[in-house]
Image (cartoon, rainbow, N blue to C red; front, top):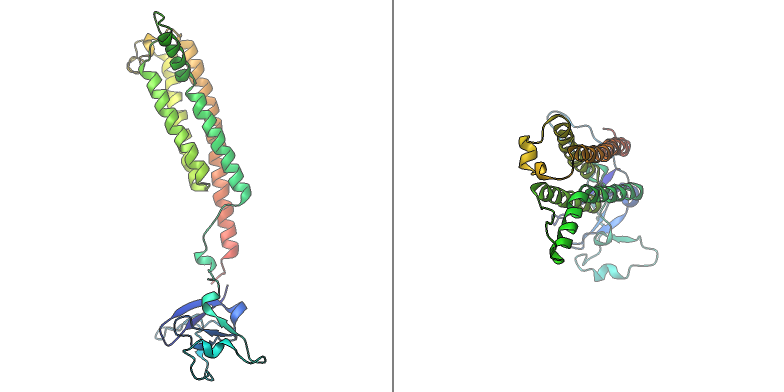
Length: 266
């Protein structure tokens, strides 16, 4: 997108679109001087000794009426007079090099669905801990004997689930390929943790240091059921990690192609 640089003697400078305002008269919003913009934007090749501007500079319009510093002199021009554009009312033109990026509605919708799935996965991972808390509260409120214990693994699952819920909200509020990658990394970390636990449950004995630290050795649930639960969480989180990471990479590639097509070649 070609542009013209508006330069006034008062020091005010601004770039405007050459397609819309080439050859037009505009008034400086700082000193109200009337300036005619060039009719076309041209490029000059800089040399070693002389640096030439690539954007043409506006030239002061010589036939400015007396009292050009006063806007009242320009308020009621003759009917056949050329229109004078007020530079303060011209919207800022942004070149592609500095243009920001906003996700399209399709991409925002996809990210919102991913955030919702990640939210549900967090609740799914917290399932055993939530069930244990519900059972414990039932025993506690009814003064029943031998309530189920609240062990270390319960707190670990609750903390991990709360962190996962926070990341799901983070993804929903900031739809971007970078946040999608962050969620993919978080999900990959969770998948790795459950993979390690699955191997320990299948290969180690009940008094393994990790199982003792998490107090899983005190559980009445068998190690086979614990391993089955780890496998289920590993499977769903691993599948989610794959598709989320793949979507983030494709989104980044599409943006690069779009940016390359919109950026003019030098």
